[in-house]
Length: 102
Image (tube, rainbow, N blue to C red; front, side, top):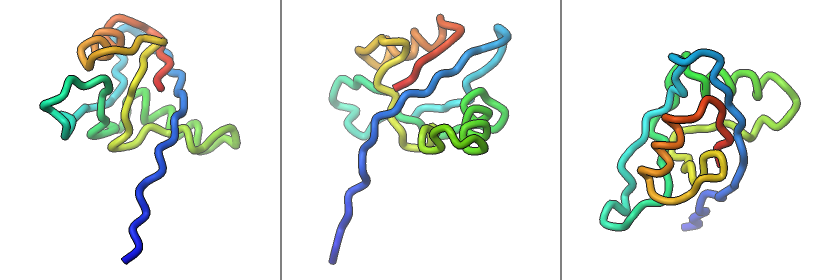
């Protein structure tokens, strides 16, 4: 039996809110290593109509970099250069109007 582990790839996604009430449209799951201090947010779902879903449609229709799409099971490890705990990353998502997600 051949088993191929998924390839981990780090990429950046730049998102900007144009109104205060815009949502990223991401839900996060509890990491499987819940007994450990987590330093990332694991994407559980990309919701239709959110900024991330809009970015995915835009980036897939352009020739730019179609692989830079946030998908289920991706891990966000930095927001605007901020790393640290899951709480630090969540706080950064709540307080900024534009984001660089890694």
